[in-house]
Image (cartoon, rainbow, N blue to C red):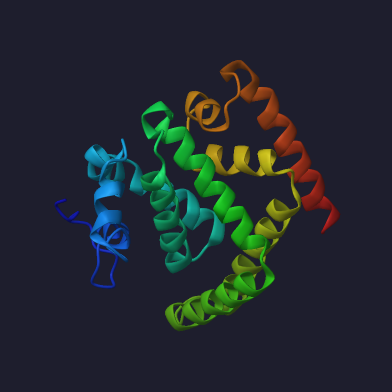
Length: 201
């Protein structure tokens, strides 16, 4: 498979990372993996969907390295599926990615680590910014993530996907619900988010 041109900043492409996982421990496993229905078009699928999946995860976990790892895990799970031709690929990828992201921010150790790293990065890169504004922005993002952790997973996914720019049709496909129900579900999710936000004030 030809390597994707997009670099992750660590000298590897995500496609290379995923494909390399199939090389251990035997060549037989490689051949078996390549028989998966998605393998023939994996690079095309990856290049088409990576920016959107990665973007959703960055908004959710607020950490580029963490988002990259979770996006890679999402595509690796797709690569392992034997029934990939039967999937709504975009919807399946968004659903898996948001589930992984929500699980990540619910994990105390991982959340604590990434928030420390985020604070360090912003301190180093916001020397010219108002410290009070930086602190307020950090606090607001932390509150948003905290509320998302408490919401019903479906509501959290609805809000994440909508605020990541997905259309009603794309959200419906991702979550397996009817398009004409998205408006009502989103309104309920937004109302619940707002109520929890007001509780924390």
